[in-house]
Length: 135
Image (cartoon, rainbow, N blue to C red):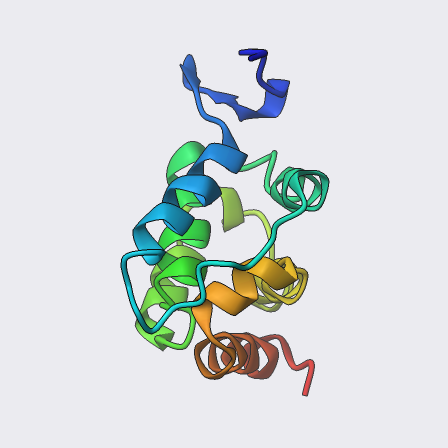
């Protein structure tokens, strides 16, 4: 198996494989009877989706992916306000920061959306849409 990683995923001298994160999450979800563990993911689609966050720190990426999307925290306004206070978003207007998050969440691959569940995903996306004025 090829151990090479995409350059933007070598954060803080730590190899971090975005696809491995998704695979591990799917293994955890497979133990949950409520989740559909048979959702198929396109590695190419997931990597392209992760590439949208290549300019952000590992902590911010993990907050967006794990807490925000996989744990459905984006419908929590306090979480979003705390997230946009991070250094990466200081140079942009808050509306633009919300827009960046909205676009990323909106492009979540279908297989990941299936893990999260439509209700949770749509609620998170709708809150970001309201903040970024996309609705």
